[in-house]
Length: 330
Ligand SMILES: [Zn+2]
Image (cartoon, rainbow, N blue to C red; front, side, top):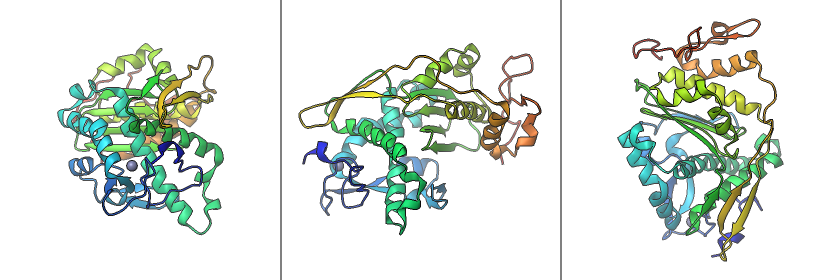
């Protein structure tokens, strides 16, 4: 096996006869069942029959989201991040924040890449793959980098110099909706809430958006406050909209070991202006999307010329306390 020579993007080999990660041919002996969203997560939050949207406008059940994987890679992922994350989610926010963030990053990256794998395998099987917008070249080259990040799982030792990602962890007040996730493959953002843990992440921005967040004291304050789920949704909307204005392209320097596996990934720092101008009206549209579950719509939250309702801040700028019984979700 020569891992370095397997490049699924090279010939668009998103097929089920090879391991999605190392490229080994699969047979009855070495194959294992790899759910994109792990079984423990589906059990814990009863996701098996819930549906996820695909880019081709169809939906798929969580339980049918599987990717081809060999036993070896399955075992490596399990030890490296799957087990530690399962344990930490079980224990809750206070333990979860102690995890090595690189592990959380690889975990989310695997979920996101697994979705892409499924999308591409479906798209290529269809009669006219050229109709699929997901085969856009620039998009694919970014996603290829995502695959490279994942390959670090195969190396005995991988080092990231500078973080390739942004990640913010929030403490959420639990409500009856224990789980929610939103993955946007075009902006590379991923939001997920599991019980009292809220994760906001950009999977490929060299920490630019996270650093921007840290520059704002009113945002920083939110990291230490138990948030109502609707407040977490508002943060996700802000992050998502800001990222949609992000105009920088992150770059990386890679080094490989003798097996041609990536062993060192250097994320180049980005300085200077990173965003185009913010529009309150456009932001309100994104916010309305994130607040749909609470029955809040665009007209409720936006007032010409530039007023947008906030569940995080009172009019005087202080933090808004929302009790558990207020704003019951649908
Ligand atoms: Zn493998």
